[in-house]
Image (cartoon, rainbow, N blue to C red):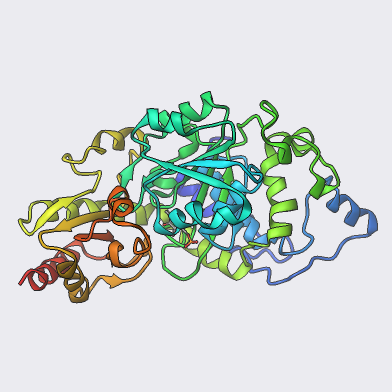
Length: 429
Ligand SMILES: *Cc1c(COP(=O)(O)O)cnc(C)c1O
């Protein structure tokens, strides 16, 4: 091989996966083993001291899961990372080394429904807080940051409307405040957007979605850019001061740019146990090989379907950022130049009842709480994912009663449009 830097299409197939040293197996084997035998007592001690990297126990690391983690790290342009049991687990794992009781995360108000609840309610149990603001209002983001803030959090292409976040502008604010920026890149996938290039410190994924791409398995990933100086402010003692949970090791001093990754394994996965299993990693490794091909088709289909909807007089609005009418259209070229994804909402003329009728009339679309599948999917946020929110919160999140969220699949686009057409006719009859 020459020393040229492999392209995305090559990395999605080869990164993290050499032929199996024991058998020559070309595909990544499913290492269905809980534990791995130490060569001798010194080897075991070196592994536990983080002096040598190797396999100990599958709650910490597993060769199949590590191959997937390395591949996602390569696709995102990071230095290290881990896989987790779900996207939500990855989000907790991203915050865990940063936050102590009393700390808060400043997050965008445009979030996946489950993330909204996780950040506004559930993390309170850990003594963590959150402040959700409109990330298009940069002054509001700056104003929300206080002495106790330890992270900034947003989605690259944000739920449910497919809004595109100005990552460069948000990263600049995070930088000025000396805080890490965590970007959930699930809806874009690393093929459409690389948040690290726009200044993100950490990238999180629900691998459940496009990375797996076939709706078989839940999983998450966390990628570290390796660029953040954890020692600069004294605000991140877990990483840059003696960590009592790991015999007083100063991870940043000992491991430099790999501090976050090693902390996530040695303390995070060890004690929180939100581990991906090797069988799950296998399904995602199968899916990820065709990521770029699928994303091209997802985007082409979404573009066609969104344009058709916008031209239909039964439709009030379409939020797809790939349409020139979108206020986010100008950001596509800069933030996700290969396309605005395949997730968007549209509002129909009529209200809650018409929306419910529309969903119940769909035949090709599956009515599920999921996105990023090869299949076209639909959901009515107001009655499902955003049900727990108040009317005001729903409006702020782009989930009004007459709004439907679609995740456009990779079927024949004319079939997708035909299904929407017949369902709209029934919904508004
Ligand atoms: C699905 C999703 C999550 C949560 O991921 P799980 O794998 O379901 O835990 C988080 N963020 C976004 C944008 C998602 O689409």
